[in-house]
Image (cartoon, rainbow, N blue to C red; front, side, top):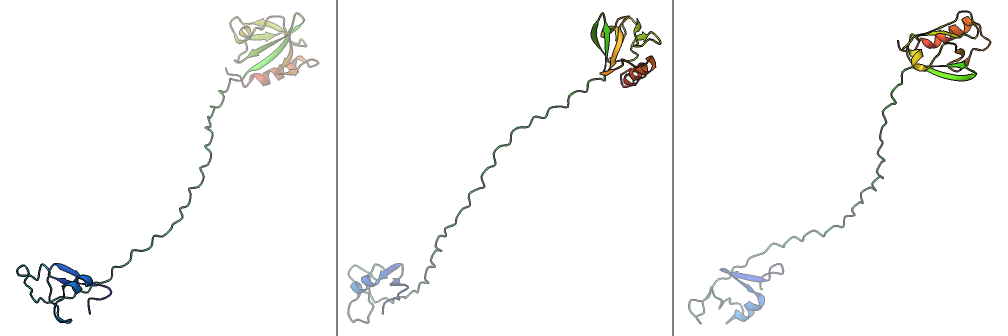
Length: 179
């Protein structure tokens, strides 16, 4: 009996003898185990009986079969978002008041942003008419002239109003102006 199915060889010293080599090396009786290998020879051609050590080899565990792993594709990238450029809020313009006057038969708009307005009206006249304009004041800078008749305050017409009604409307719209 030679080795086993798990290990079909014999070891003698540092030599490994396969079953084919063993059959070639056997001499004499079938049950003898004299070997003519390099470790069993004292001199060239001399045959020495040497004990043969049977080594049992443990079966080598099989490497696990490679697994096929399905890789999940990364989720599709979302389209890039458009860059949002935030506009700063528009600068608040200072409050203003547009007065519409009639002068030499034409409508004239004058926009005022500061108070006091720097003009006076002829008391009791309907429609109110400008009696004086302070030189260098807001009314002068806006183009108001003596003799202009007030037609509208911030788009609201004053035709048919008394002087006091037109003047009260004017005072109401002058309040928010810077001063």
